[in-house]
Amino acid sequence: QVQLVESGGGLVQAGGSLRLSCAASGSIHSVNAMGWYSQAPGEQRELVAIITIGGSTNYADSVKGRFTIAGDNAKNTVYLQMNSLKPEDTAVYYCYAVITTRTYATSTYATSTYWGQGTQVTVSS
Image (cartoon, rainbow, N blue to C red; front, side, top):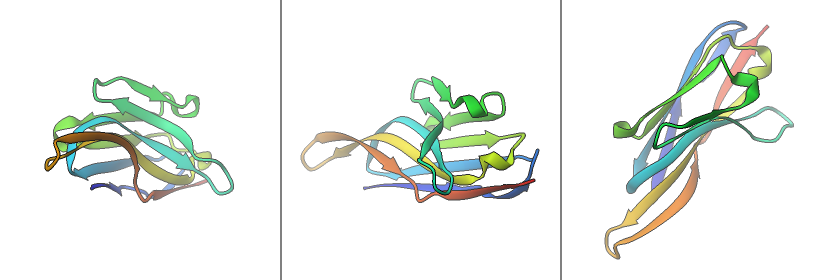
């Protein structure tokens, strides 16, 4: 019912920048929050940044001052601008969204968490 499509990953040298995008589509009534998690090889998935529908943001300490999250409510899209990238930022980045969907046939609503497929970010030293 809901799809998250990510783009923008790639290979960059240390100190460089990348911009990730994630667009949500489907039977969406409202997008309550969207964000990004990262998972390095052998590590657990960790929060990078999140933004709520009201515009509140939260960042991992490791990215504060370097990464900026922004949302476009009209497009159900979230962006992550990553500057001053470091080799330790290398990971698969997953888009995350808390979305309320509506089933029109029954006029019911459901709120669930959705994940994108992931996009690889590799920072070379």
